[in-house]
Length: 224
Image 1: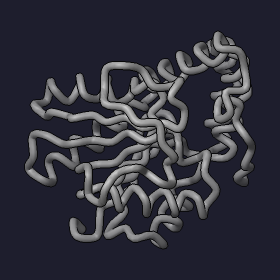
Image 2 (image 1 turned 30 degrees about the vertical axis):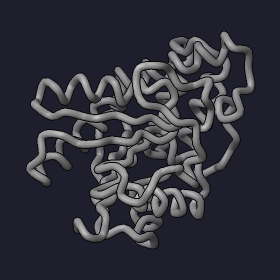
Image 3 (image 1 turned 120 degrees about the horizontal axis):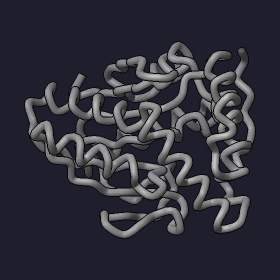
Image 4 (image 1 turned 120 degrees about the vertical axis):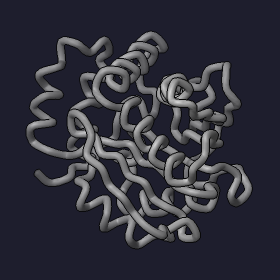
């Protein structure tokens, strides 16, 4: 199944305010029920254990409302790990009050070098062309002190079939367009590893999670 890059409607907020809100709610549902939150939680717990740390500063890029970061924070608190959250999204309209939040371009993050322990993104990498993904990884590595986390879909024919089977669950026409498009333009773990090996990464670890999710830990060179 070859990768097919296609514009997603939510990328340009191509819909009414009600349709956009419904699509963001759909994304929260996917992340809550189909591995999104669990994947980020698992990777952050692994990073904390590797550092023998009980607290991490955390930047979530392309965060939307910040649901994944907030849900992950609550789960990690139960495991004795504190997460200090900053959110960043291209659209100020997607951001909600409650966390430190900055509207910014993911390719030119407005933070100094080594500003956060961890920089993370969820369901963002598949939006990027290969060269853009490498640029983002290098920019995120600049801003982090320890690691970059990539939580994303795995492109696979069965995954695409499941997305179509779930169409009755989607609240927004935006989701009905964007969900299959997302799978078609997602990367395989092998493609992701090959791309990241040509960045400033010190080491790349890729894990498979529930329902065609991949979790990628891109360690900064001095932490490899």
